[in-house]
Image 1 (spheres, rainbow, N blue to C red):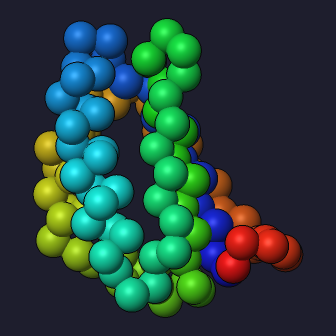
Image 2 (image 1 turned 90 degrees about the horizontal axis):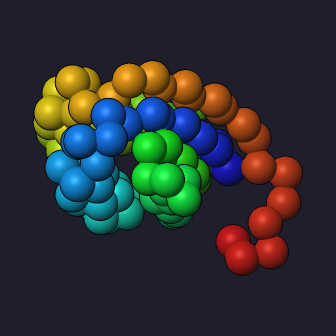
Length: 97
């Protein structure tokens, strides 16, 4: 499994807008053939968003990046995000898969 984690710092005044957009993106991402998990988490103060995404492989993630819904999300949220850090991992085991 191909694991993508994303840590975003959101402008506090834009949290509501960002939350609506990321939940829409997550819902549509889970309809993709290669996406098996798309968890959206917020810090207690609401200023950071953590994403945990699972894809079958790198090709499935590349397919995700090419979707219209991801491109729209990425464009609409650029001004809402202060910082963004993406990390890639390989899942060695998951008893739920």
